[in-house]
Image 1 (cartoon, helix red, strand yellow):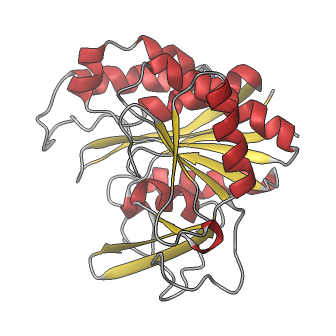
Image 2 (spheres, rainbow, N blue to C red; image 1 turned 135 degrees about the horizontal axis):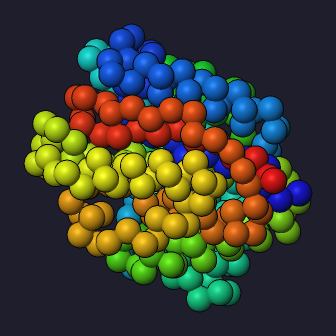
Length: 289
């Protein structure tokens, strides 16, 4: 069974109501994240392949976690959420092998214990926030550390944890996504591919300095997602990417590679700008055509 669901989602921690009761300027994004989770659950995925920009980065290599579990904690305004999830070792290894066979530079990395089943990878907000809406929201006290005992029951599917490298040519991300789709097809289980993407951080009030390319790039992103064609974003100019301060391009191109192998159609549920971090947030979901 190939990929059964795809999504482009943001990762602002204020989207989690247990951390921030008030969603601020992104109420529709929070609602859309809930809807995204329902749509994903309806496809009954047995594993979630998730790519984000804020986890372990290895210069010149796509990074894939090889630990047996992953754990992390988010703290905000005196509130806390914790997460402890299983990593699918078999599919992680299959994706790494498939990508390497095609010349894609991939580094598998471990953390904590030397035995894979006893090791734990750290989770960041770029992974925790999407997974919260994908079934991993049980928030067991004391579980959000790599040395913590695993919960008695895992509330969601195992994951494959991926982080791109911006040192690689953009096309490499597309090729990696194609390898993901082929490895999933050979595995035979139902899988979702989640691209954790925030978009321009250079809107008015940005700590990076506001730039008009922020609005231009975000408009191009929404057009591409509405057209079921994240791959067209590969044509963004390097200076546009820098000026807009986006962090979603590389993961979206991985999704484009998946969609090259498994054509999908879908919709953009919403787009809003989060005023505190001045970042554009979009939620889009896709199903096989």
